[in-house]
Image 1 (tube, helix red, strand yellow):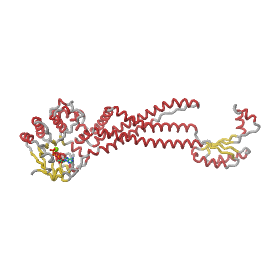
Image 2 (tube, rainbow over the protein chains, first blue to last red):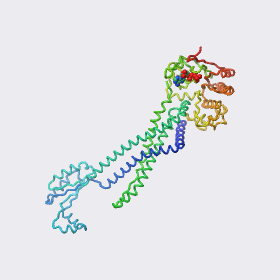
Image 3 (cartoon, chains in turn green, yellow):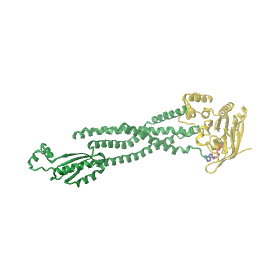
Image 4 (cartoon, rainbow over the protein chains, first blue to last red):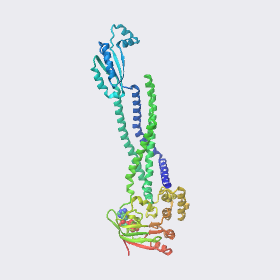
Length: 303
Length: 221
Ligand SMILES: Nc1ncnc2c1ncn2[C@@H]1O[C@H](COP(=O)(O)OP(=O)(O)OP(=O)(O)O)[C@@H](O)[C@H]1O
Ligand SMILES: [Mg+2]
């Protein structure tokens, strides 16, 4: 047990020493992995930010029902009754044409124009808030309402929310594809790095085997090396994303100010960051494993 | 104890290096394997730590059939067999000391304990003062002694040496033979492949020895 622990710690120390012995090559490798991981990680960060922004702008789906100009009180009551009976409706606010007209007349920009009209051009209206899970049924619901008596027009206010959601879903998919592609790149980098190491350490590996080193003892430093390469690459990627966000935030702040908003991009949550680091380390380990399994076979005793 | 029974070894390509070799080596014996170049001496020695495997027949080492041993058990077999290779297999990118401590490092011996044993082994072969040198800076005889120090650092019960005196003048060769005789005296089973008659003569003058002679893969009766 002690010997086992010692073998591990010695392998680990040897790995660090190996990284330090070829600083230039190590830094280059880590940078390559960092860039490869920074692309999907950065895209993911932007996506998360967009998702949040979209959520802030519109919460529940909404629609407006405009009645015909000749709608009577009874018609309004009928619509109100039907809305109350509709299970997907969360709440409905009635706005009479008189109230809407008065409100508009009070506004400084349109007041004069409306005052010149001798007739109220506005219809009675309902603003209907739907339950969140009604988003899918939105179109069917709107078409149904269109057929209600004295309903002139149904306007789905939040159709764009679904467009944004669809776009975000597409974005998610692209990030996944990007991550998968660049993971292969990371695998290739570690695979090849480990292959070169095995080549330059042929003698040491051969002699160690002859002197009674187990396969595990010989493989272990390469696994550690791959995992560390991935881990440092992942950390580099996180730094790059953080740097990118900081730079972009300066621009975003200016843009947001013109919309009187204080919107800003933020960094990935700690959980996401840790997941990226763990993912990168596992990929490095896997690359090393593939390489070692492939290239250490030739050291086996022959028949 | 080492026991070969009807051992055949054919290399890829079809060359038959050993053709039905049988013999036994008792514990603490000092045994020479002689024969012309290409007779199969190295091949015979390589079968013991399973660097090569037999095609038929069996090799028993201390009651274990090593010719059928699982790959994962082989490292543990090798830790009990000191090996001196015909091509030495020293690592020239590290110091004399690091070469000697390597067999201990790969088995997880505590570094302090390992350093002590490595120095003891170096002392035994008279290289203690050169521990920081690179093996390349050593003479041929010193390199051979370094290889011996590495082979004995694990305190193996079996020592296998393939041409340990090749290319050495007789004074160096004599010193090395004396080392093997010393190990044998403390109970180590020693097998030496050589075609140097002087080496055998010198050892025989100091200890009881036995010789096996190989001729094209066949043991002389
Ligand atoms: N890996 C190999 N592949 C194919 N043939 C081999 C291999 N190793 C040895 N041989 C052949 O087997 C025969 C015996 O070789 P071996 O090395 O055992 O001889 P040896 O007695 O040790 O000779 P030397 O005194 O020159 O070291 C030789 O003919 C050699 O060419
Ligand atoms: Mg030979």
